[in-house]
Amino acid sequence: MLLNTTVHLSVNFDRPEDFLIFIFHILFATSAVLVAGSVVIGISSSRSLRGQNRFIFMLNTSISDTLTGFSVYYLGLFDVQEGYPSRNGTFYILPSFLGVNVLTFLFAQLDRYLAVCHPFFYNRYITRPAVISVCGFCWIYTYLILTVQNLVPISKAAQINAFGVMTLQVIVLIKVVMTVKLYIIARGQLVREAPSADWDSKTESLRIIVFVVICFLALWGPSFVNIIVRQLTGKGLRFRNEATNLFATMARMNALFTPALYIWGSPALRGAVWRAVWRRVCPWRRGRL
Image 1 (cartoon, rainbow, N blue to C red):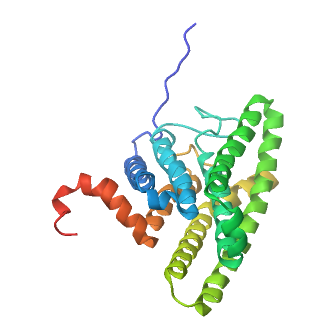
Image 2: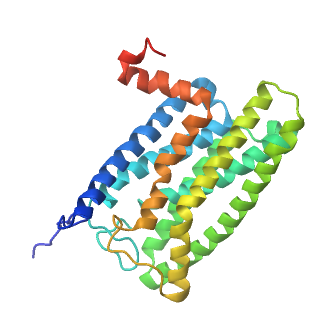
Image 3: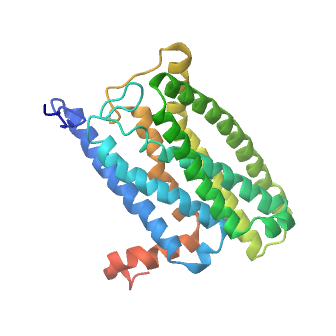
């Protein structure tokens, strides 16, 4: 007996908005891959950036963002519904890239807090291998939980998923508190310090992480709230598939906005990205910059 392995497109193209949704996902996926991918190449090709802990965290999230961009070519263009039950789903493998970033941002915030408030402890214990290990932990933890979730019966998987949502609530609360704390530090403690190269680096890194986390929570928040409402009340908003899921699309847009904020906030990264990627792609602009 032959199995029907055909996966239909995400929209039927019988309404004008269907064309807009389809084109949007193509443009968004391509933009995310290009921007996040250029950050990955820029940091990887620069020894000075690779030697700084904050850029290791940026590299980790940008790898995840690049993969998220590629995932949109499937989640956004085809009829896919993740969940219980799923339709043409990926067992949450593709959406879980977002989970890697949630953990990475949390550790990046802690890293900046220790660097500014406890510099002696930071310089002694928060080494580059330690940061790389933490980034690896973000991937291992996320996909280890996902593996267990996919191996157990659906009833248990749903319970694990509910526990994961509860854990995310705690992480989000911590992230909000850390964001406020870092903002207060940026406005208070650093203002009292004498300007220096280290002062500029701390100010830049704090500004970037605060803006990135605020943007991340703003785009991801509606999806998070909708998931909680659906689990607690059984109501909430439901969508035909991932492509028409406005909240999920907003959350995935972090894959574009996060690396863009990195480039905007860091002149060193901007220069590395230009030298490693875009100068070679746009050689006619060499003489203008």
